Length: 122
Image (cartoon, rainbow, N blue to C red; front, side, top):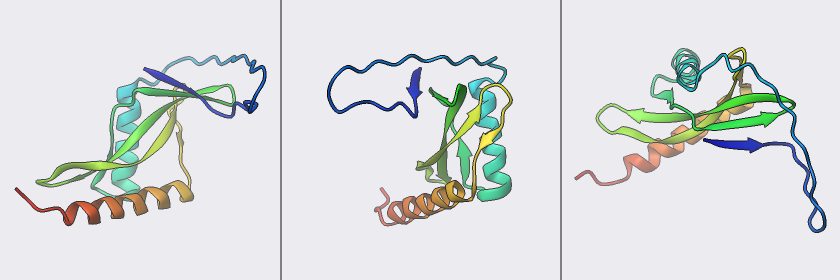
């Protein structure tokens, strides 16, 4: 498991000192975070998009989030690629998603699909 510390300002040179204090009651498992993202993607963004079980935790603003990859899949093609990621609060399951992120995921999915469609089969 990888833990990402966001919003940490590091100097270009010199002493780098920081401390992290984040407490979270991990009520949402990685598998449940994947499910929540998959449900959201299928209901509001696109049926070919779903969540993948995350292997990253993000610490930001004294909270802990699962970073769930959003996968584009096609019928017979299977998994095409990663279209983005959604952070899910590990305590309450809230998805950190907005219109900008949805637009970015849709654009990435279109680009992935277009590049995948151009590849020869076999």
